[in-house]
Image 1 (cartoon, rainbow, N blue to C red):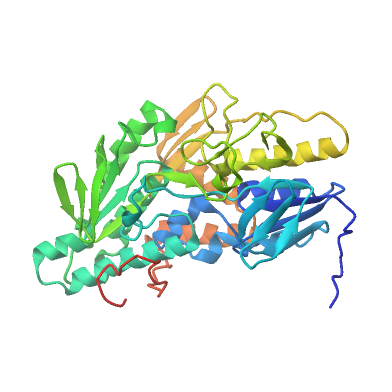
Image 2: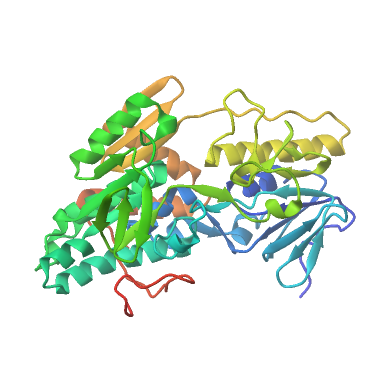
Length: 435
């Protein structure tokens, strides 16, 4: 069957690698431009990463925070979608090579492939402490978290039972903080009546941060309030302590050994290997250094945005790897392509900080918006509203709203299914046997 809406091949091709926040924004910003937009991603869906921890903590289901890329772009007649993984970029030939041996040519290229978890050179920790970047990661963490209660329920030895019921989260950024609060509240509020031999409310959730504060980008005041709120619901916050070892049944914090079967990694990120493969200058975590207009030095036809770009042209150092940065950069890159085609001057990227927020548990959050900083229930409501509006699919907004409402009224999130997601290569079962 032929394409009912073919895109003229004579139009300049804008190839976008990655359909995250930045890539998707760039694609939609080119909707009315005289170009052919090709979006290539190794997944068939756009993922709303800020809510990924809620899948990991069994609050939401995967379909609530993901939508097929083809569905999102179905009405954009100049857009095409390719399911594939980009392995290499030939800047001279203006071509990208895919893992299946095929290739795609371009006139303009936008690299928005995102980031991956960084274990600071400790590859052996990856299987023991899963990160949280994909739906597979979230399902694996959810599986491990729920399985530990099942194992603890069957365990007779009190010391081993405490080992099962200890959870260590490494990293005090928004992901680590939100995950710690959610997991503790589930153990404290949702699970107690479902088990007969264990006290799930006594489960230890330990948040480890090597720096002097959690949520460092939020400012000292909000960071301190976040610690107070987390400790109020029972999370143990360890500041200024770095993980020095991870084993199958323990973590090492300097001279302290903490027995645990569940370690979750939220401590660091690095650019995907594609960035380093270009042979251009990168920063210490592998991000491509970009010009003020987001293009690569010496390659005005190639742009890098989001977690793949190190934008160092402001006064405060590199921009954080958050969705608003990627969205605004996607818009800027698209506008600069249109300006180039129209023989107009490009514009330098200027980030407009719209604030930061993080949830700390049921009805608790911290938020910094403009000159305002606030906490508690008002911050939580603001967080709910903004995240609902950022979901790209209307169906997802409706479903997520009712899932949150149900969870808030009943303290019983409904996504508590242990699925055979299976460990990633090198990862072991939390119990040492089939789940």
